[in-house]
Image 1: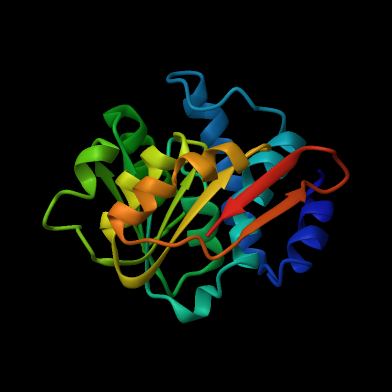
Image 2: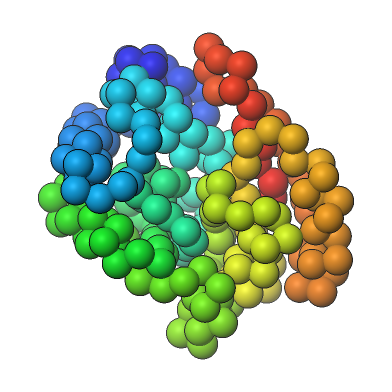
Length: 214
């Protein structure tokens, strides 16, 4: 996916990027590649692939969520900042908390924050299972999101405690999620959640399936 193809594709998601936002994404890509030589952040390094499989993929949750109607979002198990950083770049009015268990990755996120002037993110060093149990963060967020971190039952235990009553948890998955949904029924009941819907789609110009569970 070239940058122009990326721009055209996210417009179909309802996102009209500014020149500043496109510059921030480009700089983010450069920092990702630079840091990836020091610590393991991603196996995907080709620019076109990063724009498709990381940047575009991260922004697909805007199909499920009106970012103008929320204030706070936490990205648990963010890794190299996906989906949190692309979302934060495209939605400056919201506050994003990026959580990762590895301090080296948190250092990377803080470097990105400084270098591309992202004032709306906070990077937290914490294990996913401890974050939602911490009184500072419990039931504090409008939305909690996680991308390809664990199976659904485990993710619900990590994420549901972080959102306010009436908040949304968004799990970004690959293909074949029905078994996970079936296995998660007990966890949903115990944690007070319900599945609103699941959205299956393919990344543009590919047969790579993605599922977003809300």
